[in-house]
Amino acid sequence: MAARGRGRGQMTFNVEAVGIGKGDALPPPTLQPSPLFPPLEHRAAPLPGGEEGEYVLALKQELRGAMKNLPYFVKPGAPRRDIERYSDKYQLSSPIDSAIDWNPDWRRLPRELKIRVRRLRKGRTTVLIPKSKQRVVLDKEEAIKKLESLEKKEEEVTSEEEEEKEEEEEGKEEEEEEYDEEEHEEETDYIMSYFDNGEDFGGDSDDNMDEAVY
Image 1 (cartoon, rainbow, N blue to C red):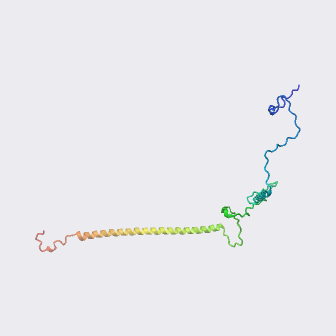
Image 2 (image 1 turned 60 degrees about the vertical axis):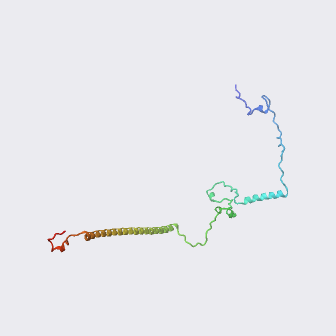
Image 3 (image 1 turned 180 degrees about the horizontal axis):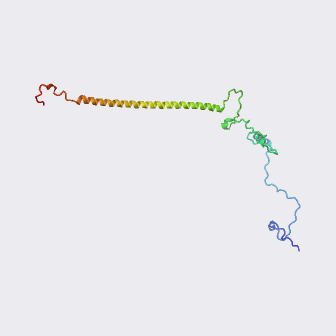
């Protein structure tokens, strides 16, 4: 014998919550259109009419147009091609930024925000010296200046050393002269003042040698 299935399909929600008990038949389907949206209790205020409303609407449209024409208005990008190419990175897109053509009142803005467009000068006759030659010339001049400064310093040092040597020699000569003068004074003072050999003693008393001398 063939057995039936394990179970039948069941409801995915609780039927009793809808008001249908167990074993009751489901209501038949309705083939009528859904009811209309209920009427609004509070309706929107009507648009103001007259000349004043039209004037405000015209100002609004003019403001929109002016905002779109300003340089900081973000324009939509160009549609991409089906194949992305390497050269597309270096090509300008169709909406070009008009910031360079915009001339605001720079008195109200800082100088750092002002765009400077570089222009090539025509009729330039000056010959530009390459940087390598300029550096070589500058290096030579700096080397000459350094050598001159070193020579001056050496001359100053040598002159100072010579002056010190001369001062030392003069001091030594003065000390030697003072020493010689002191020795000469001592020798002459001792010879002239204190030394007596006794040769002149009793020279006048040769005739009276027999008499006693006191």
